[in-house]
Image (cartoon, rainbow, N blue to C red; front, side, top):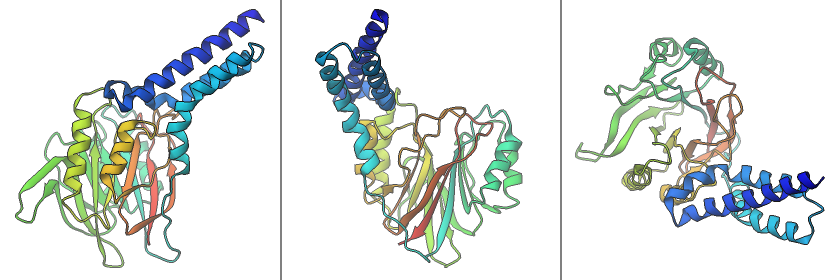
Length: 305
């Protein structure tokens, strides 16, 4: 029993230290990547408390101290307001998937996408063995974007695409902003809406903060009322960088609430996100079954508000 209590004490101490170090990412960005595991640190502390329940009041106090940063990051995500769609309004099923350059089963991945019956598909990491499957997807999603070699992103649509491009354009046709692929789609109600897909670098890379800032500044220059932005953002809701992005992307709302999508076998990290402008409300958001990618596909159904 003594060894069990020692293990409990170590879990409480280790989980608490890790949680506070992660929370410090709000002030030291190099630590923010650890915030992705904040719920796991909380679980460590709770397991430690269960194992070391005979350690006394100090263990309870230490556990509560360690759970404080976990609660400060996790609770706001679980309780934040996400606007709902009005019943009877036009809906759009949007699927976002990082198909992975080393996809182990491209055909099964394509079939999973088609089985979800999406209206719009946004893909990342296309510069791999999944690219030949685009032809199969085009059988059901005949409209698509062109992308320069190496951009690795694509948008496919069941409905006509009125305009599209790589990088945003101002009224004079000049390109601006960070790498992304966009398309303006004409829905069945004949109301156009713009979708954007993007792929952020890993959170340990120094340019991620720059990419987030540049993206927010770029989106501020375009009409965001009916905008939909989705992709592999390599950000979890517990990270300070995600909180900053949520504020920077306003009036867009992040419709994916703590939806784990990586890794494929046992998803624990919600790093694939979808934002939508004030014209849209949420109907549903779900992760789909595993494919040949290291990510799970994310399917979000939106409706007009």
